[in-house]
Image (tube, rainbow, N blue to C red; front, side):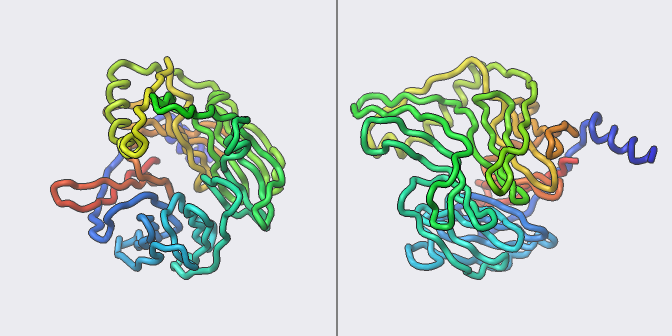
Length: 332
């Protein structure tokens, strides 16, 4: 018993020295998303998914292709691992594959502009744009339970969106946006909402609110140097939009960063990525499912990442070798 207590104290208060490891992935060309299930890793590209064995990092297979037919995708938006299935969100449909990449089926989307679609029991959770899309009325970003035909059953949370003007002048938008997205674990829905601070609502598979995580947090001011870096990154990210529409983007900056930038739920823990950095690494707050803090770590900042089995995995492009590499760090 004393050994267990000592281990918990050590985990909570002693910073861990992270040993970074890496391996080359020559089969990867334009990765978008990454997910882990047991000893397998899935890397989604434009229209296909690659499977790797995490024990020896051997490339196993590539499945999927670009198109609009059964099993085909135009662009992969999200990839979720759900027990023995792989859930793939494409532009106009949700697809189900086995963990080996075998096509199971799909459901086409016709009524909603979708960001997330995730199956829970005999229903779905959708995150989508709703409201008066063609007129001048209110428009919402809504997270809701949907029936088997993807019809609305119950709204879990929503936020009103500002309408974009019809002029050809500057488009005004926030450079650092609040987090308002769902995450899924064990048939529960975790909705993060930094408009309310360090805030996460937890819902059952029937859409009932179970409990809320609402914690105090350290406010981090946005510095002038960070504004320069954000604008430099935004210029690259939004270059396509600007060239396509001819509209210059005007960014608004707030005084402080939101409470956190993202979170994920894995292995009976909640991992929250904050805006606090140290030596070009980002803070990860580790909590149990009730929101009790277990520890902290600082992980390398990377655009494509995931957490599984206590490890932080991420992809980086090695420009000298002209190939992508997989890195991983032990969080605890």
